[in-house]
Amino acid sequence: MSTQSNLFYDEIDSILGPITLLATSQGLCNLHFGMVENSLPTLKAWLKKHGIKGELQRDCDQLRPIVEQLHEYFSGQRASFTIPLDLFGTPFQKCVWNALTEIGYGETRTYKEIAQEIGAPKAVRAVGGANNQNPIPIIIPCHRVIGSNGAMVGYGGGLKKKETLLQIEGVIEKIS
Image (tube, rainbow, N blue to C red; front, side, top):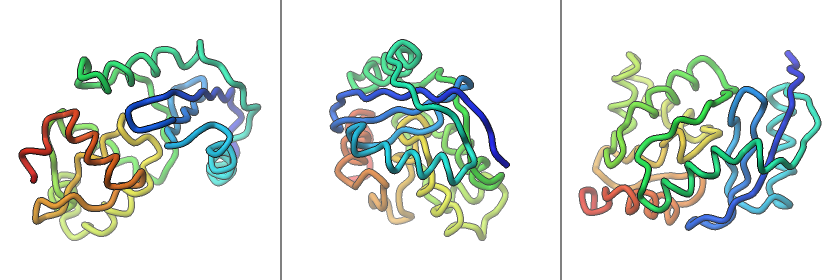
């Protein structure tokens, strides 16, 4: 299925380095760690994979509310986001991503706990796979998912970024 959409992108500087944002007219659909010139090929492949067609336009005005909320989060002034999202994934992935949004600021869950919360207690590995495919890290807080032993495990942006995000939220002392 192919979807025609207005596609907007911009790049921000953050405590984690450059981040490229991609949104449809419906909301943020992808957050990619890296500069625009490095991220666009990956984002174009992601759009193609999900059948999303449209002309990419750099538009800081369209993405300003998202950028402002991310800067507030990074500076410790925001604990939750009110950004409209436009999610593309399987029903199972969307179910997992929705469960991730229920993990509060400064809290963590294990993959096993997420699997139990979504009613699929044996799907721990599948939850990990959906977590890994999260197109909107930070906003959909996959960084708040840790191993059953309390260890920081796997993060698409790298464990250092995950550690930084958990430090911002004051969690690091709880799991170290």
